[in-house]
Image (cartoon, rainbow, N blue to C red; front, side, top):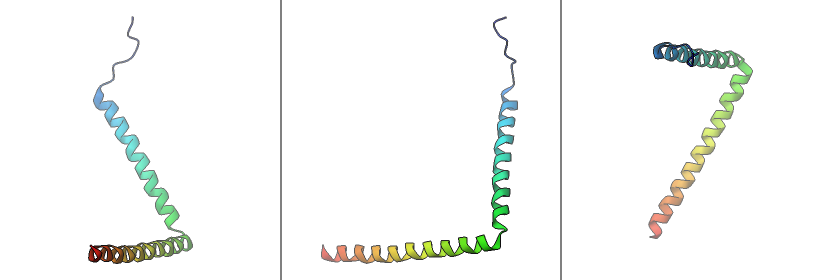
Length: 74
């Protein structure tokens, strides 16, 4: 009488957890596509991404110049 818990096969538990993970992932993908359908928001996101990429590229160019300057000094 000490064991009141029901013995559940490990494969069933793994299957249930897998289904939960798949449903969460599919919901996130569905939500992302839903928000993407707004053209105005999508354009703003693309412009912000381009701006960020431009800033990163400028920083990398400056970083490369600094690296080459340091190497020539040595």
